[in-house]
Amino acid sequence: MATITLLRRQAASDYLFAKHGVARSRQTLAKYACLGVGPTFQYLGRVPVDTPAALDEWVDSMLSEPTRSSSKAPPSAACGGRDDR
Image (cartoon, rainbow, N blue to C red; front, side):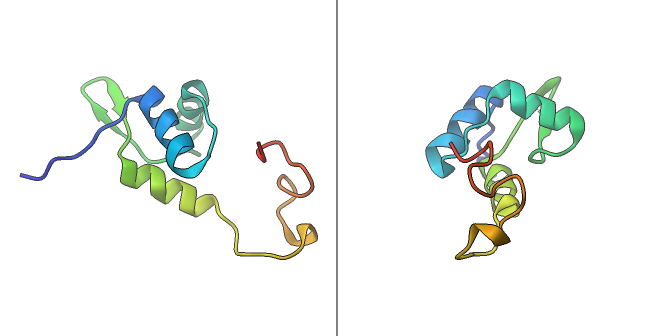
């Protein structure tokens, strides 16, 4: 039987920042789960858990194609969008 790494929300938040430099708090990840816009997750009993693979896929899905100009970037990311921390 293969071992699967399961991360609770704070560990998922830490993982996203450590591996991808994506800063999302555990509260933000919880809100994304309510809205259906975050990474896919599972429940372990009543506890929501993420896998590193699901988090990696979510980050990949947010990435744009490579670009040389900010005029071709999505409106929220162009010239100092909120998530360029």
